[in-house]
Amino acid sequence: MSDPIDWLAIWEHGSEVILALLTAIFGLLASSWVLRIVRRICDRSKLDETLTRFFSKMSRWAVLGLTAMLVLDTFGIDVSSFAVVLGAMGLALGMALQGTLGHFASGVMLLIFRPFKVGDSINVAGVSGVVFEIDLFSTAIDTFDNRRLIVPNSNVFGKTIENLSYHSTRRAQIEVGTSYDADVDASRTILEKVVAGNTYRLAEKNGDVILVGLGDSAVTWTLRVWCQRSDMGACKEQLIRDTKAALEAANIDLPYPQLQIHKS
Image (tube, helix red, strand yellow):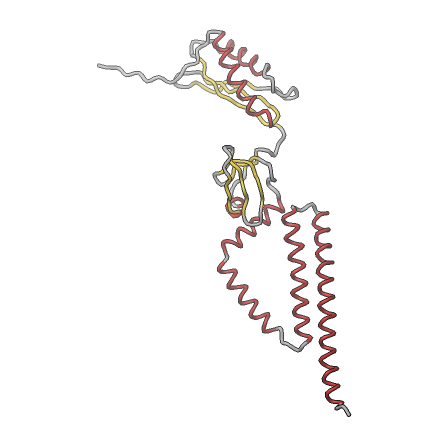
């Protein structure tokens, strides 16, 4: 005849195993469910895809971690000691990876506030180029001469960021010097025709011709023309070319600095 105490022990351990399995199954299902919910919330908030993946995975691992602790507790294992050990390890790891965590925090801020996006032309931390990729720890930038630079995010978010692609329109500007012998009003009329005739000038925005000052060897002018961002280079080039041609056609000299040496 079987010993009833043995059956009782088997029942107790068996119930623990069954409860642990049910807890694990529920935890796995809950982690997938939480992952989908967090991803849906991030998508509705229009967060960056990198940040969406990070938050959804972190939420899933948090649920799985909680599930593991519940399973251990089912078998009577004290999880408080594990929590203390994990906390100490986390503190030590945080101290060791202080710089890396700074890059990570800056990456999260970049993805949330979005001062720029992939494809934008930017100037930041002494680097100019087109943003290729924004990661949680670094930003990849392709320079205008096609070099790939990887910049830590703390160096990006902690500096002044100039986004050249933020506005759809830009203002092209050049400076030119005319001879002191040239009539000021005549020079202005010529330069205004150059600005008005610029092919890339936006019709709704007038150009500017400004008398800046009197230099050492020339009367200085500033020419400004508003254009589409994509036409910035071509607009400025036409301004330079047309200004030179118009002034030369009017026999107005374009002086350059000269050094005179007098011998006694």
